[in-house]
Image (tube, rainbow, N blue to C red):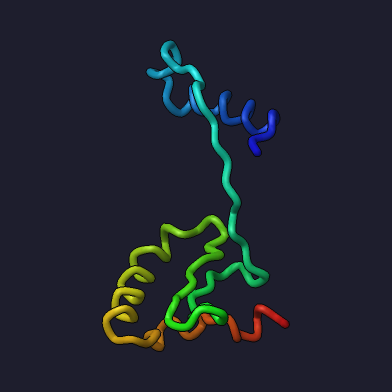
Length: 100
């Protein structure tokens, strides 16, 4: 849920970044979302244990854009080949950095 201090900070920064919008700027809607974080701050890409054939992708810790393009390519390959490419091995669920 958006908190008043965060929303106030955003409302003061946006006009400084976009000064030409200031006269017309009016907040009409807000939304908030969950930031998917993992213990080791790296995304998870693996088969969902309870759903055979389903690949789970998440936990980008707010840094999805740098990973997005390459992960998209690798996941497309996984969809056509039927298995995860070795380049995704460091992001699987059984990696030591996630702990148990």
